[in-house]
Amino acid sequence: MSKQSSRILSDDAVILALGLFWLLLYFAVRFFLEANPDLARGMRLGLAFLPTPLFALFLWRFIQGIRSADELERRIQLEGLAIAFPLGVLLLTTLGLVQRAVELNFQDWSYNHVWPFFIFFYIFGQAFARKRYL
Image 1 (cartoon, one colour):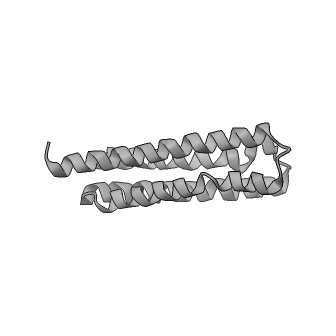
Image 2 (spheres, rainbow, N blue to C red):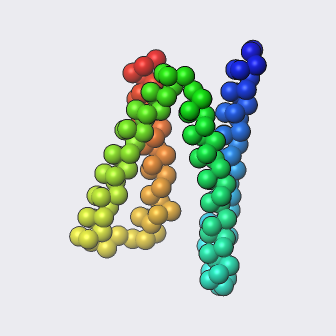
């Protein structure tokens, strides 16, 4: 394995580790906030923002990884996002209209329940693009 390919693998491992660590921290904070509703508002807000810097670091490293990828991988990433973004807009606009029509149950359709759809849309877009190009 060349030095360049070993570096890329280690960059991928860092990106994956940051993403997994953010996900664990997100759910730890979420469950802690749900289990402790009597915490002071300032403490609750501080805890809510705790995962944000880690996710920002993940995004920064992820974007660096895309920038350092070859042309085909960048094209696949772009097409995956070109599929995922409109699907996300479709989801949010539809939910917005449905919420105007009827009252949606917060336990089923809060932000906590909607954001994972964006990850699924991205994975779907990636799979579609990879099938097309590879």
